[in-house]
Length: 73
Image (tube, rainbow, N blue to C red; front, side):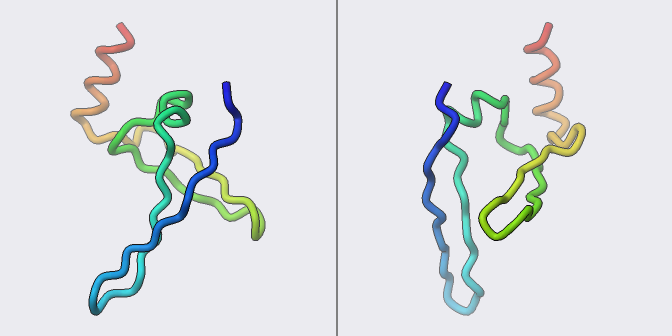
């Protein structure tokens, strides 16, 4: 499995709003770690060059949680 995935940080600039930055998780990486749409994650800044992403417990919306539980059976 590929251990590194290069991505590009994208900026969204709307009139009258501060820019927002988006980081997209490549599908291959999301699949490898079982990441699904709707999950909440927390970013931790370890140093200027390292961000760590963590999931916290069961953070899926109820509909996704039920779907995930039925897939495991």
